Length: 356
Ligand code: EPU
Image (cartoon, rainbow, N blue to C red; front, side, top):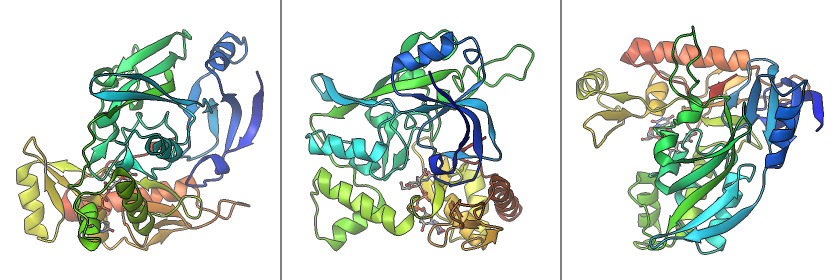
């Protein structure tokens, strides 16, 4: 087992923040975890599981032992009456995996094309886009307990998926500390994930941007490949490519409000963008709220609000030779946005990425 010391992390996080891991271990096989746990020096060290670094904001060097997951492999493992079960290693690139499923005749993930990050990170925040969330296609996952080394399997209910949320984002109950819930944050490493891709495929088309593509191309019955191409095109026009401009996608969650709160906000500004949810509450477009407060294109140091989508914070530097944004600048900008949205609309925006 090789423990690398003082490892630069800017190439491993899509915001390209300059920071170091005091120590880093690459996990390319399940056995690497067991070997690590048996190590007298590192086995009990606090650990941080690292996927594609596409949903993390570094505010300084990482003191925990970073476990950089590179477990590979994609295969069709079983089929049920209704679905093909396709399994992917946690270290597989998410978008490459989506393409693999389409190339092999298993549609169902096309709306989730071009989401940065790895397969292992996808259940952590229950990734979602254009009317599909990971939980809609999820079957189960295998993970390793980072204390006992035991491998265990979780189904969707056990993952406790919510909007950009799961059991992996919440800490465990620590005796004497404030309860955080029965979570698995920093307790488990996801090894592989299985998806149930429907044998009878139906396109998910309800989202406005997709409907616009259908109208533009006069196509009422698109194939999965067409939807995949449209989603890629839509994302490329709205969202910055992290390889070119550092970012972590949406920086805040879209807030959910009661009908009364929604009415109050409409009274403050009737142009507000909102959607009615099945449970009667309303979801507000956080990007619109931030935009309405005049933040689009603004900066704090080298941290900025993306010109084409105010929900995305970007690193205006390259993250080389210290010329990029610091995590502190990103968080200062984020807090300033939260304050102004709260003052104008009475809404508290909740950050979406993990802040380390
Ligand atoms: N809007 C503005 N100004 C802005 C940004 C947005 O007025 O600067 C308005 C748009 O015109 C639109 C509405 O806000 O009417 C919603 O914007 P958009 O369609 O771009 O979607 P979103 O709600 O901002 C969410 C997800 C994205 C996902 C898209 C498509 C969250 C936090 N974000 O964004 O997910 O790709 O919908 O489904 O739920 C991510 O999580 O990292 C992510 C990119």
